[in-house]
Length: 350
Length: 213
Image (cartoon, rainbow over all chains, first blue to last red; front, side, top):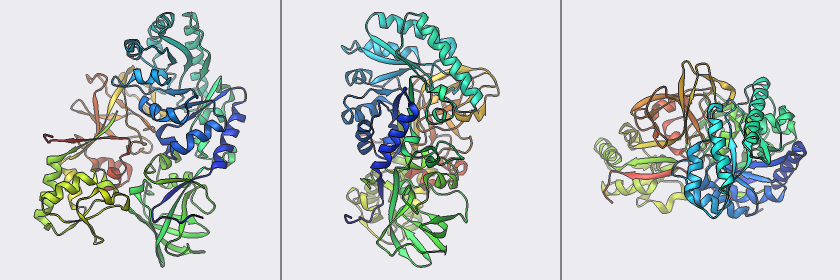
Protein backbone atom coordinates (compact mmCIF):
# COMPACT_ATOMS: atom_id res chain seq x y z
CA UNK A 1 0.00 0.00 0.00
CA UNK A 2 1.36 3.47 -0.85
CA UNK A 3 2.22 5.68 2.09
CA UNK A 4 -0.74 7.46 3.60
CA UNK A 5 -0.71 11.22 4.13
CA UNK A 6 -1.80 13.00 7.28
CA UNK A 7 -4.93 14.26 5.53
CA UNK A 8 -8.16 12.27 5.15
CA UNK A 9 -8.71 10.38 1.89
CA UNK A 10 -11.87 9.57 -0.03
CA UNK A 11 -11.49 6.02 -1.39
CA UNK A 12 -13.67 4.75 -4.21
CA UNK A 13 -14.33 1.09 -4.82
CA UNK A 14 -14.20 0.62 -8.58
CA UNK A 15 -15.71 -2.86 -8.49
CA UNK A 16 -18.65 -1.60 -6.45
CA UNK A 17 -19.27 1.27 -8.85
CA UNK A 18 -19.15 -1.06 -11.85
CA UNK A 19 -21.42 -3.61 -10.28
CA UNK A 20 -23.88 -0.87 -9.28
CA UNK A 21 -24.10 0.31 -12.87
CA UNK A 22 -24.61 -3.29 -13.94
CA UNK A 23 -27.33 -3.75 -11.32
CA UNK A 24 -28.96 -0.48 -12.42
CA UNK A 25 -28.95 -1.70 -16.04
CA UNK A 26 -30.67 -4.92 -14.90
CA UNK A 27 -33.36 -2.91 -13.12
CA UNK A 28 -33.79 -0.69 -16.17
CA UNK A 29 -34.40 -3.69 -18.40
CA UNK A 30 -35.24 -2.23 -21.79
CA UNK A 31 -35.22 1.35 -20.41
CA UNK A 32 -32.16 3.51 -20.83
CA UNK A 33 -30.00 4.44 -17.84
CA UNK A 34 -29.14 8.09 -17.17
CA UNK A 35 -26.67 8.52 -14.36
CA UNK A 36 -26.70 11.73 -12.34
CA UNK A 37 -23.16 12.99 -11.81
CA UNK A 38 -24.09 16.43 -10.52
CA UNK A 39 -22.44 17.94 -7.44
CA UNK A 40 -19.05 16.36 -8.16
CA UNK A 41 -20.71 12.97 -8.69
CA UNK A 42 -22.55 13.25 -5.38
CA UNK A 43 -19.34 14.23 -3.66
CA UNK A 44 -17.41 11.13 -4.71
CA UNK A 45 -15.34 12.92 -7.34
CA UNK A 46 -16.48 13.36 -10.93
CA UNK A 47 -13.07 12.85 -12.50
CA UNK A 48 -12.87 9.25 -11.33
CA UNK A 49 -16.56 8.45 -11.47
CA UNK A 50 -17.61 9.78 -14.88
CA UNK A 51 -15.31 7.74 -17.18
CA UNK A 52 -15.94 4.65 -15.07
CA UNK A 53 -19.74 4.74 -15.23
CA UNK A 54 -19.66 5.39 -18.95
CA UNK A 55 -17.31 2.43 -19.45
CA UNK A 56 -19.63 0.33 -17.28
CA UNK A 57 -22.54 0.99 -19.62
CA UNK A 58 -24.48 4.05 -18.43
CA UNK A 59 -26.24 5.32 -21.54
CA UNK A 60 -26.55 8.95 -20.57
CA UNK A 61 -25.38 11.43 -17.93
CA UNK A 62 -27.10 14.23 -16.06
CA UNK A 63 -25.60 17.28 -14.44
CA UNK A 64 -27.43 20.22 -13.00
CA UNK A 65 -26.25 23.36 -14.70
CA UNK A 66 -24.46 24.20 -17.94
CA UNK A 67 -21.27 25.14 -16.12
CA UNK A 68 -20.96 21.66 -14.62
CA UNK A 69 -21.89 20.16 -17.98
CA UNK A 70 -19.01 21.98 -19.63
CA UNK A 71 -16.62 20.64 -16.98
CA UNK A 72 -17.93 17.07 -17.40
CA UNK A 73 -18.06 17.06 -21.21
CA UNK A 74 -14.33 16.31 -21.80
CA UNK A 75 -14.58 13.31 -19.44
CA UNK A 76 -17.36 11.77 -21.56
CA UNK A 77 -17.17 13.31 -25.04
CA UNK A 78 -19.70 11.00 -26.73
CA UNK A 79 -22.31 10.42 -24.02
CA UNK A 80 -25.64 12.28 -24.05
CA UNK A 81 -25.47 14.83 -21.24
CA UNK A 82 -28.45 16.69 -19.79
CA UNK A 83 -28.45 19.99 -17.84
CA UNK A 84 -31.66 21.50 -16.54
CA UNK A 85 -31.12 24.17 -13.93
CA UNK A 86 -30.96 27.18 -16.21
CA UNK A 87 -30.65 30.82 -15.22
CA UNK A 88 -31.05 33.93 -17.38
CA UNK A 89 -27.27 34.40 -17.30
CA UNK A 90 -26.48 30.75 -18.19
CA UNK A 91 -24.25 30.29 -21.21
CA UNK A 92 -26.73 28.65 -23.59
CA UNK A 93 -24.43 29.07 -26.61
CA UNK A 94 -21.62 27.17 -24.90
CA UNK A 95 -24.06 24.40 -23.98
CA UNK A 96 -25.15 23.97 -27.60
CA UNK A 97 -21.55 24.05 -28.80
CA UNK A 98 -20.70 21.25 -26.33
CA UNK A 99 -23.83 19.25 -27.35
CA UNK A 100 -25.28 19.47 -23.86
CA UNK A 101 -28.98 18.64 -23.94
CA UNK A 102 -31.21 21.08 -22.06
CA UNK A 103 -34.17 20.47 -19.76
CA UNK A 104 -36.69 23.20 -20.59
CA UNK A 105 -39.30 24.43 -18.09
CA UNK A 106 -40.15 27.93 -19.30
CA UNK A 107 -40.65 30.03 -22.41
CA UNK A 108 -37.75 32.35 -21.67
CA UNK A 109 -35.40 29.37 -21.95
CA UNK A 110 -36.61 28.67 -25.48
CA UNK A 111 -36.16 32.37 -26.28
CA UNK A 112 -32.61 32.14 -24.95
CA UNK A 113 -31.86 29.17 -27.22
CA UNK A 114 -33.26 30.98 -30.26
CA UNK A 115 -31.30 34.12 -29.40
CA UNK A 116 -28.03 32.14 -29.61
CA UNK A 117 -28.50 31.73 -33.39
CA UNK A 118 -26.20 28.76 -32.93
CA UNK A 119 -25.15 26.54 -35.82
CA UNK A 120 -25.82 23.62 -33.45
CA UNK A 121 -29.40 22.42 -33.13
CA UNK A 122 -30.48 22.27 -29.48
CA UNK A 123 -31.65 18.90 -28.20
CA UNK A 124 -34.23 19.59 -25.52
CA UNK A 125 -36.24 17.72 -22.90
CA UNK A 126 -39.53 19.49 -22.11
CA UNK A 127 -40.23 19.33 -18.39
CA UNK A 128 -43.70 19.29 -16.86
CA UNK A 129 -44.33 19.83 -13.15
CA UNK A 130 -46.27 16.76 -12.03
CA UNK A 131 -46.45 17.61 -8.32
CA UNK A 132 -42.99 18.38 -6.95
CA UNK A 133 -43.50 22.11 -7.66
CA UNK A 134 -39.83 22.73 -8.09
CA UNK A 135 -38.80 23.13 -11.72
CA UNK A 136 -41.01 22.08 -14.64
CA UNK A 137 -43.83 23.97 -16.34
CA UNK A 138 -47.28 24.02 -14.79
CA UNK A 139 -49.99 22.34 -16.85
CA UNK A 140 -51.63 25.73 -17.50
CA UNK A 141 -48.39 27.03 -19.04
CA UNK A 142 -47.71 23.80 -20.94
CA UNK A 143 -49.68 24.53 -24.17
CA UNK A 144 -47.76 27.77 -24.78
CA UNK A 145 -44.43 26.10 -24.06
CA UNK A 146 -45.25 23.21 -26.38
CA UNK A 147 -46.47 25.52 -29.16
CA UNK A 148 -43.26 27.53 -28.99
CA UNK A 149 -41.15 24.36 -28.97
CA UNK A 150 -43.06 23.06 -32.02
CA UNK A 151 -42.42 26.32 -33.83
CA UNK A 152 -38.69 26.17 -33.05
CA UNK A 153 -38.56 22.52 -34.09
CA UNK A 154 -40.11 23.35 -37.46
CA UNK A 155 -37.58 26.13 -37.86
CA UNK A 156 -34.76 23.65 -37.22
CA UNK A 157 -33.59 25.42 -34.05
CA UNK A 158 -34.44 22.62 -31.59
CA UNK A 159 -35.25 18.95 -31.52
CA UNK A 160 -37.64 17.91 -28.75
CA UNK A 161 -36.09 14.63 -27.75
CA UNK A 162 -37.94 13.99 -24.52
CA UNK A 163 -40.82 14.86 -22.24
CA UNK A 164 -40.02 14.39 -18.58
CA UNK A 165 -40.71 15.23 -14.97
CA UNK A 166 -39.29 14.63 -11.48
CA UNK A 167 -41.17 12.96 -8.65
CA UNK A 168 -41.83 14.11 -5.09
CA UNK A 169 -41.81 10.44 -3.95
CA UNK A 170 -44.54 11.23 -1.45
CA UNK A 171 -46.55 8.01 -1.87
CA UNK A 172 -47.26 5.35 -4.48
CA UNK A 173 -50.58 7.01 -5.09
CA UNK A 174 -49.16 10.48 -5.79
CA UNK A 175 -46.40 8.94 -7.92
CA UNK A 176 -48.98 7.21 -10.11
CA UNK A 177 -50.90 10.51 -10.39
CA UNK A 178 -47.68 12.16 -11.52
CA UNK A 179 -47.16 9.40 -14.08
CA UNK A 180 -50.67 10.09 -15.42
CA UNK A 181 -49.94 13.82 -15.67
CA UNK A 182 -46.71 13.15 -17.55
CA UNK A 183 -48.53 10.96 -20.05
CA UNK A 184 -51.21 13.63 -20.56
CA UNK A 185 -48.50 16.24 -21.09
CA UNK A 186 -46.79 13.98 -23.64
CA UNK A 187 -50.10 13.58 -25.50
CA UNK A 188 -50.37 17.36 -25.81
CA UNK A 189 -46.85 17.40 -27.24
CA UNK A 190 -47.74 14.76 -29.83
CA UNK A 191 -50.91 16.65 -30.73
CA UNK A 192 -48.69 19.66 -31.47
CA UNK A 193 -46.93 17.60 -34.12
CA UNK A 194 -43.84 16.77 -32.09
CA UNK A 195 -42.72 13.14 -31.78
CA UNK A 196 -40.59 12.88 -28.63
CA UNK A 197 -38.25 9.91 -28.69
CA UNK A 198 -38.45 9.20 -24.95
CA UNK A 199 -40.39 9.88 -21.75
CA UNK A 200 -38.58 9.82 -18.42
CA UNK A 201 -39.73 10.24 -14.84
CA UNK A 202 -38.29 7.91 -12.21
CA UNK A 203 -35.17 8.44 -10.14
CA UNK A 204 -33.76 5.90 -7.64
CA UNK A 205 -36.77 5.77 -5.32
CA UNK A 206 -39.55 5.18 -7.86
CA UNK A 207 -37.41 3.02 -10.16
CA UNK A 208 -37.19 0.49 -7.34
CA UNK A 209 -40.72 0.83 -5.95
CA UNK A 210 -42.89 1.24 -9.05
CA UNK A 211 -41.60 -0.44 -12.24
CA UNK A 212 -44.21 1.26 -14.41
CA UNK A 213 -42.47 4.63 -13.78
CA UNK A 214 -39.29 3.46 -15.53
CA UNK A 215 -40.72 4.37 -18.95
CA UNK A 216 -38.01 4.86 -21.60
CA UNK A 217 -35.29 6.00 -19.22
CA UNK A 218 -34.46 5.93 -15.52
CA UNK A 219 -32.40 8.69 -13.94
CA UNK A 220 -30.33 7.17 -11.21
CA UNK A 221 -28.32 9.12 -8.67
CA UNK A 222 -27.67 8.19 -5.08
CA UNK A 223 -28.32 4.47 -5.51
CA UNK A 224 -25.59 4.18 -8.13
CA UNK A 225 -23.15 5.30 -5.46
CA UNK A 226 -24.36 2.56 -3.18
CA UNK A 227 -26.34 4.70 -0.77
CA UNK A 228 -29.99 3.99 -0.11
CA UNK A 229 -32.72 6.49 -0.94
CA UNK A 230 -34.93 4.73 1.62
CA UNK A 231 -34.85 5.23 5.37
CA UNK A 232 -35.74 1.58 6.08
CA UNK A 233 -33.32 -0.22 3.77
CA UNK A 234 -29.59 -0.19 3.07
CA UNK A 235 -28.33 -0.13 -0.50
CA UNK A 236 -27.05 -3.72 -0.01
CA UNK A 237 -30.66 -4.84 0.46
CA UNK A 238 -31.36 -3.57 -3.05
CA UNK A 239 -28.31 -5.17 -4.65
CA UNK A 240 -26.13 -2.06 -4.63
CA UNK A 241 -22.75 -1.76 -2.90
CA UNK A 242 -21.40 1.36 -1.22
CA UNK A 243 -18.67 2.96 -3.33
CA UNK A 244 -17.18 5.58 -1.01
CA UNK A 245 -15.11 5.25 2.16
CA UNK A 246 -13.59 8.15 4.07
CA UNK A 247 -10.41 7.33 5.97
CA UNK A 248 -8.50 9.53 8.39
CA UNK A 249 -5.33 9.19 10.45
CA UNK A 250 -5.39 8.49 14.17
CA UNK A 251 -3.76 11.57 15.70
CA UNK A 252 -4.20 10.84 19.41
CA UNK A 253 -4.58 7.49 21.16
CA UNK A 254 -5.58 6.90 24.79
CA UNK A 255 -9.04 6.36 26.30
CA UNK A 256 -9.90 9.18 24.01
CA UNK A 257 -9.03 8.66 20.37
CA UNK A 258 -8.83 11.53 17.95
CA UNK A 259 -9.04 11.17 14.17
CA UNK A 260 -7.65 13.84 11.89
CA UNK A 261 -10.84 14.72 10.08
CA UNK A 262 -13.66 17.13 10.90
CA UNK A 263 -16.30 19.45 9.59
CA UNK A 264 -13.58 21.43 7.84
CA UNK A 265 -13.29 18.42 5.52
CA UNK A 266 -17.03 18.22 5.11
CA UNK A 267 -18.00 15.74 7.82
CA UNK A 268 -21.40 16.72 9.22
CA UNK A 269 -21.57 16.45 13.01
CA UNK A 270 -24.17 14.22 14.65
CA UNK A 271 -26.93 16.23 16.27
CA UNK A 272 -27.20 15.95 20.06
CA UNK A 273 -24.85 14.80 22.78
CA UNK A 274 -23.80 11.36 23.95
CA UNK A 275 -24.11 9.81 20.47
CA UNK A 276 -22.63 6.30 20.40
CA UNK A 277 -21.24 4.53 17.35
CA UNK A 278 -19.77 1.15 16.43
CA UNK A 279 -16.43 1.44 14.70
CA UNK A 280 -14.19 -1.53 13.77
CA UNK A 281 -15.72 -3.71 16.44
CA UNK A 282 -15.40 -1.16 19.24
CA UNK A 283 -18.03 1.02 20.82
CA UNK A 284 -17.35 4.77 21.07
CA UNK A 285 -19.07 7.90 22.24
CA UNK A 286 -18.68 10.83 19.83
CA UNK A 287 -17.42 13.59 22.13
CA UNK A 288 -16.90 16.19 19.45
CA UNK A 289 -16.71 16.73 15.72
CA UNK A 290 -14.36 19.69 15.49
CA UNK A 291 -13.03 21.54 12.49
CA UNK A 292 -10.17 19.12 11.84
CA UNK A 293 -10.54 16.39 14.47
CA UNK A 294 -13.15 13.99 15.69
CA UNK A 295 -12.89 12.98 19.33
CA UNK A 296 -14.11 9.51 20.27
CA UNK A 297 -14.32 8.11 23.78
CA UNK A 298 -13.63 4.39 23.85
CA UNK A 299 -16.39 2.52 25.69
CA UNK A 300 -15.85 -1.17 24.93
CA UNK A 301 -14.48 -3.68 22.46
CA UNK A 302 -11.29 -3.58 20.40
CA UNK A 303 -9.56 -0.22 20.13
CA UNK A 304 -8.64 1.60 16.95
CA UNK A 305 -4.97 1.31 15.86
CA UNK A 306 -2.14 3.55 16.96
CA UNK A 307 -1.31 7.10 15.97
CA UNK A 308 -0.45 7.46 12.30
CA UNK A 309 -2.60 4.61 11.02
CA UNK A 310 -5.48 5.46 8.69
CA UNK A 311 -8.91 4.34 9.89
CA UNK A 312 -11.98 3.89 7.74
CA UNK A 313 -14.48 6.18 9.47
CA UNK A 314 -17.46 6.31 7.25
CA UNK A 315 -18.71 4.61 4.14
CA UNK A 316 -18.60 1.11 2.73
CA UNK A 317 -15.38 -0.39 4.10
CA UNK A 318 -15.76 -3.15 6.66
CA UNK A 319 -15.95 -1.77 10.18
CA UNK A 320 -16.71 1.78 9.07
CA UNK A 321 -19.97 3.58 9.81
CA UNK A 322 -22.27 3.34 6.77
CA UNK A 323 -23.16 6.71 5.23
CA UNK A 324 -26.85 6.05 5.87
CA UNK A 325 -26.18 5.46 9.58
CA UNK A 326 -24.05 8.55 9.88
CA UNK A 327 -26.78 10.49 8.07
CA UNK A 328 -29.38 9.37 10.59
CA UNK A 329 -27.15 10.59 13.47
CA UNK A 330 -26.79 13.95 11.72
CA UNK A 331 -30.55 14.18 11.06
CA UNK A 332 -30.09 14.11 7.31
CA UNK A 333 -29.78 11.70 4.36
CA UNK A 334 -26.81 9.90 2.84
CA UNK A 335 -26.89 12.28 -0.12
CA UNK A 336 -25.86 15.20 2.08
CA UNK A 337 -23.20 13.19 3.90
CA UNK A 338 -21.36 12.48 0.63
CA UNK A 339 -22.19 15.66 -1.29
CA UNK A 340 -20.72 17.69 1.57
CA UNK A 341 -17.25 16.10 1.38
CA UNK A 342 -14.60 18.67 0.50
CA UNK A 343 -13.73 18.28 -3.21
CA UNK A 344 -10.11 19.16 -2.43
CA UNK A 345 -9.63 15.94 -0.45
CA UNK A 346 -7.65 13.35 -2.33
CA UNK A 347 -9.73 10.71 -4.15
CA UNK A 348 -8.18 7.29 -4.73
CA UNK A 349 -9.39 4.01 -6.11
CA UNK A 350 -9.40 1.51 -3.25
CA UNK B 1 -25.85 30.92 -9.62
CA UNK B 2 -24.43 30.47 -6.12
CA UNK B 3 -22.44 33.14 -4.39
CA UNK B 4 -20.78 34.21 -1.20
CA UNK B 5 -19.94 37.88 -0.67
CA UNK B 6 -17.19 38.75 1.76
CA UNK B 7 -17.69 42.29 3.05
CA UNK B 8 -14.16 43.58 3.58
CA UNK B 9 -14.99 46.64 5.72
CA UNK B 10 -17.06 44.41 8.03
CA UNK B 11 -14.34 41.79 8.22
CA UNK B 12 -11.69 44.43 8.87
CA UNK B 13 -13.77 45.98 11.66
CA UNK B 14 -14.22 42.54 13.23
CA UNK B 15 -10.45 41.98 13.24
CA UNK B 16 -9.89 45.48 14.67
CA UNK B 17 -12.43 44.85 17.42
CA UNK B 18 -10.78 41.53 18.21
CA UNK B 19 -7.35 43.21 18.37
CA UNK B 20 -8.80 45.89 20.63
CA UNK B 21 -10.29 43.31 22.99
CA UNK B 22 -7.49 40.72 23.04
CA UNK B 23 -4.42 42.26 21.39
CA UNK B 24 -2.65 41.13 18.24
CA UNK B 25 -0.67 38.29 19.85
CA UNK B 26 -3.63 35.97 19.37
CA UNK B 27 -3.27 33.04 17.05
CA UNK B 28 -6.15 33.52 14.61
CA UNK B 29 -8.12 30.41 13.80
CA UNK B 30 -8.17 30.34 10.01
CA UNK B 31 -8.84 26.64 9.57
CA UNK B 32 -11.40 25.41 7.04
CA UNK B 33 -10.42 28.20 4.64
CA UNK B 34 -11.00 30.72 7.43
CA UNK B 35 -14.45 29.23 7.92
CA UNK B 36 -15.54 30.19 4.46
CA UNK B 37 -14.13 33.73 4.53
CA UNK B 38 -10.99 32.73 2.62
CA UNK B 39 -7.53 32.29 4.14
CA UNK B 40 -5.83 34.80 1.84
CA UNK B 41 -8.36 37.51 2.53
CA UNK B 42 -8.47 37.21 6.31
CA UNK B 43 -4.73 36.72 6.75
CA UNK B 44 -4.00 39.67 4.45
CA UNK B 45 -6.26 42.03 6.39
CA UNK B 46 -5.02 40.67 9.72
CA UNK B 47 -1.38 41.22 8.82
CA UNK B 48 -2.08 44.87 7.99
CA UNK B 49 -3.65 45.23 11.45
CA UNK B 50 -0.59 43.82 13.22
CA UNK B 51 -1.56 40.17 13.73
CA UNK B 52 1.31 37.74 13.18
CA UNK B 53 0.05 34.24 13.93
CA UNK B 54 -2.57 31.92 12.51
CA UNK B 55 -3.60 28.30 12.50
CA UNK B 56 -4.52 27.03 9.03
CA UNK B 57 -5.30 23.64 7.52
CA UNK B 58 -2.23 21.87 6.11
CA UNK B 59 -3.65 22.10 2.59
CA UNK B 60 -3.90 25.90 2.87
CA UNK B 61 -0.39 26.56 4.17
CA UNK B 62 0.62 28.31 0.97
CA UNK B 63 -2.30 30.70 1.19
CA UNK B 64 -1.50 32.62 4.36
CA UNK B 65 0.84 35.56 4.84
CA UNK B 66 0.83 34.99 8.62
CA UNK B 67 3.18 32.66 10.49
CA UNK B 68 1.57 29.39 11.39
CA UNK B 69 1.29 28.46 15.01
CA UNK B 70 0.13 25.41 16.95
CA UNK B 71 -1.07 27.55 19.88
CA UNK B 72 -4.76 27.36 20.79
CA UNK B 73 -6.34 29.53 18.13
CA UNK B 74 -9.08 32.12 18.59
CA UNK B 75 -12.35 32.37 16.67
CA UNK B 76 -13.20 35.69 18.32
CA UNK B 77 -12.72 37.43 14.94
CA UNK B 78 -15.16 35.00 13.32
CA UNK B 79 -17.98 35.63 15.78
CA UNK B 80 -17.55 39.37 15.33
CA UNK B 81 -17.38 39.09 11.54
CA UNK B 82 -20.71 37.25 11.47
CA UNK B 83 -22.20 39.88 13.77
CA UNK B 84 -21.27 42.43 11.10
CA UNK B 85 -22.91 40.22 8.47
CA UNK B 86 -19.58 40.05 6.66
CA UNK B 87 -20.33 36.70 4.98
CA UNK B 88 -23.39 36.82 2.75
CA UNK B 89 -24.43 33.48 1.23
CA UNK B 90 -26.89 33.80 -1.62
CA UNK B 91 -28.41 32.21 -4.69
CA UNK B 92 -30.72 33.45 -7.40
CA UNK B 93 -34.34 32.91 -8.36
CA UNK B 94 -34.51 30.82 -11.54
CA UNK B 95 -38.20 29.95 -11.70
CA UNK B 96 -41.47 31.39 -10.40
CA UNK B 97 -44.85 29.73 -10.32
CA UNK B 98 -48.31 30.36 -8.91
CA UNK B 99 -49.95 27.52 -6.98
CA UNK B 100 -53.25 27.18 -5.11
CA UNK B 101 -53.78 26.77 -1.37
CA UNK B 102 -53.13 23.23 -0.20
CA UNK B 103 -50.29 22.48 -2.65
CA UNK B 104 -47.65 20.03 -1.41
CA UNK B 105 -44.15 21.28 -2.17
CA UNK B 106 -40.82 19.45 -2.68
CA UNK B 107 -39.90 15.89 -1.67
CA UNK B 108 -42.40 14.03 0.42
CA UNK B 109 -44.92 16.88 0.17
CA UNK B 110 -43.93 17.89 3.73
CA UNK B 111 -44.81 21.54 3.17
CA UNK B 112 -48.34 22.49 2.20
CA UNK B 113 -49.20 26.02 1.10
CA UNK B 114 -51.63 27.75 3.44
CA UNK B 115 -52.93 30.23 0.82
CA UNK B 116 -52.92 30.73 -2.92
CA UNK B 117 -49.32 31.80 -3.36
CA UNK B 118 -46.23 31.93 -5.55
CA UNK B 119 -43.18 29.70 -5.30
CA UNK B 120 -39.66 30.82 -6.19
CA UNK B 121 -37.02 28.26 -7.10
CA UNK B 122 -33.59 29.25 -5.77
CA UNK B 123 -30.17 27.88 -6.73
CA UNK B 124 -29.00 26.93 -3.26
CA UNK B 125 -29.09 23.40 -1.93
CA UNK B 126 -27.29 21.21 0.54
CA UNK B 127 -24.44 20.49 -1.86
CA UNK B 128 -23.76 24.24 -1.79
CA UNK B 129 -23.67 24.27 2.00
CA UNK B 130 -27.23 25.25 2.83
CA UNK B 131 -28.02 22.71 5.55
CA UNK B 132 -30.83 20.30 4.82
CA UNK B 133 -33.24 21.06 7.63
CA UNK B 134 -35.22 18.22 9.09
CA UNK B 135 -37.98 17.92 8.12
CA UNK B 136 -38.62 21.45 6.84
CA UNK B 137 -37.96 25.04 7.87
CA UNK B 138 -35.62 27.92 7.30
CA UNK B 139 -36.02 31.48 6.15
CA UNK B 140 -34.29 33.49 3.46
CA UNK B 141 -34.11 37.18 2.61
CA UNK B 142 -35.72 38.08 -0.69
CA UNK B 143 -36.34 41.61 -2.01
CA UNK B 144 -35.96 43.15 1.44
CA UNK B 145 -38.33 40.70 3.13
CA UNK B 146 -37.91 37.44 5.04
CA UNK B 147 -39.69 34.51 3.39
CA UNK B 148 -40.03 30.84 4.33
CA UNK B 149 -38.31 27.92 2.68
CA UNK B 150 -41.09 25.68 1.35
CA UNK B 151 -40.40 22.01 1.90
CA UNK B 152 -37.30 19.88 1.81
CA UNK B 153 -34.07 21.56 0.81
CA UNK B 154 -32.73 19.53 -2.11
CA UNK B 155 -29.14 18.87 -3.19
CA UNK B 156 -28.89 21.89 -5.45
CA UNK B 157 -32.09 23.85 -4.99
CA UNK B 158 -34.64 25.11 -2.54
CA UNK B 159 -38.09 26.60 -2.93
CA UNK B 160 -39.40 29.75 -1.26
CA UNK B 161 -43.04 30.55 -0.52
CA UNK B 162 -43.13 34.21 -1.53
CA UNK B 163 -46.83 35.14 -1.58
CA UNK B 164 -47.36 38.26 -3.66
CA UNK B 165 -43.82 39.57 -3.21
CA UNK B 166 -42.74 41.30 -6.43
CA UNK B 167 -39.62 39.59 -7.72
CA UNK B 168 -38.27 38.61 -11.10
CA UNK B 169 -35.94 35.92 -12.37
CA UNK B 170 -32.38 36.55 -11.23
CA UNK B 171 -33.43 38.13 -7.91
CA UNK B 172 -30.98 37.45 -5.07
CA UNK B 173 -32.10 35.18 -2.27
CA UNK B 174 -29.81 35.64 0.76
CA UNK B 175 -29.65 32.61 3.03
CA UNK B 176 -27.51 34.26 5.68
CA UNK B 177 -25.56 37.43 6.25
CA UNK B 178 -28.53 39.65 5.43
CA UNK B 179 -31.83 39.91 7.27
CA UNK B 180 -31.42 36.30 8.41
CA UNK B 181 -28.33 35.81 10.59
CA UNK B 182 -26.16 32.71 10.27
CA UNK B 183 -26.93 31.98 13.94
CA UNK B 184 -30.52 31.24 12.91
CA UNK B 185 -29.37 28.62 10.43
CA UNK B 186 -27.14 27.15 13.15
CA UNK B 187 -30.13 26.90 15.46
CA UNK B 188 -32.40 25.38 12.81
CA UNK B 189 -29.82 22.82 11.68
CA UNK B 190 -28.18 21.95 15.01
CA UNK B 191 -24.80 22.70 13.39
CA UNK B 192 -22.39 25.29 14.75
CA UNK B 193 -21.77 28.63 13.03
CA UNK B 194 -18.13 27.83 12.12
CA UNK B 195 -19.29 24.55 10.51
CA UNK B 196 -21.83 26.38 8.36
CA UNK B 197 -19.21 28.80 7.03
CA UNK B 198 -16.75 25.94 6.51
CA UNK B 199 -19.47 24.05 4.66
CA UNK B 200 -19.92 26.60 1.87
CA UNK B 201 -18.99 24.53 -1.16
CA UNK B 202 -16.00 25.16 -3.39
CA UNK B 203 -18.34 25.61 -6.36
CA UNK B 204 -19.93 28.68 -4.73
CA UNK B 205 -18.50 31.82 -6.37
CA UNK B 206 -16.68 34.14 -3.98
CA UNK B 207 -16.81 37.91 -4.30
CA UNK B 208 -14.91 40.49 -2.29
CA UNK B 209 -17.06 43.55 -1.62
CA UNK B 210 -16.41 47.04 -0.36
CA UNK B 211 -13.05 47.80 -1.93
CA UNK B 212 -11.96 49.78 -4.93
CA UNK B 213 -9.76 47.33 -6.73
